[in-house]
Length: 99
Image (cartoon, rainbow, N blue to C red):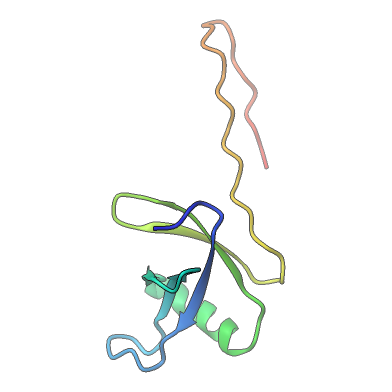
């Protein structure tokens, strides 16, 4: 499908018979990966139509969906770093990590 961090394109589909606000997600190779949820389409579609610079990347896949990260300010989104694994020593209690 896509590698994490790979760019994806968000394309509005105003002629979509199921939902004129639909926004499709395409891989860098032009393969349609799916659609944004209806809740996100209205706002993101309006930003795209207004010419807002949107950059999106593939983050990963779940059992029935995929995640993308998008920025609306011209920056390139980044995949959040994964928390490091704590030592397995039973008396070690790591501090919580905050962004």
